[in-house]
Length: 302
Image (cartoon, rainbow, N blue to C red):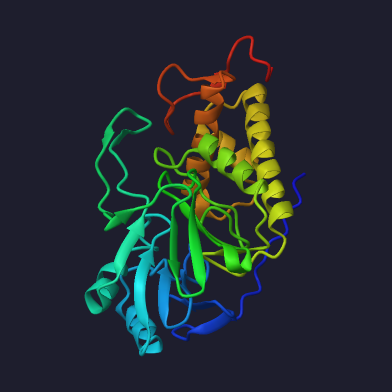
């Protein structure tokens, strides 16, 4: 089994700007939850003229604490790892107060949902789009964008070369695995993005939720193995006769909290979409949560 070492010891204070390293400070937003842990961490890079990564949800108290703590300094860039609602909405209030430009991968295009419906354009519109390898800089620091789709199609990590730190957003976290929710979340993309990180030389990951990851390569390898094992478990359930996602969730996620069953169903769907793409599984149409699945005849998974 994949040996994932989870990091859950996280000492912090809401509303307090804390020093992480010579170039990095952080403040945690008060938006705890099942999918956010203690809350979204906003990172500040540099001194004097600074970049702000993931301003967080539309939470006035968090914005107010950030601006108060950074008085006398200038926020020049607001960087968004991805356009989920716990990461970017506070950017608008910070921009009104500071004039800082907003950077991100977006906008995401409309796309077909798993059941064939059209998914509308998302509302996140950065002032300037970033693509893989683009670099932003300030006094004494450089941040390079690393496109890591999977958790979200527009997900970016940011690499701080001066300290070999990767701000890993929700792509790799220490306290939990990432949720992959179709249609925007895509397991195949996620696996490729994890492989991409394996070939980098980052010394530390600073995720958007929870504590730092101090052994990034073994951690990423464990995440890759975990997903492979989850796909194998789903194939075993299909071989045993399970056909519906709720059946698979009940068998694979033993002891799961009822509040997480919906997320588990989305994760199983993400795996099934990838297994259909790999021609190991079939379901008689576009994969959805209410389809019935079976092993594809002649598949190597049998």
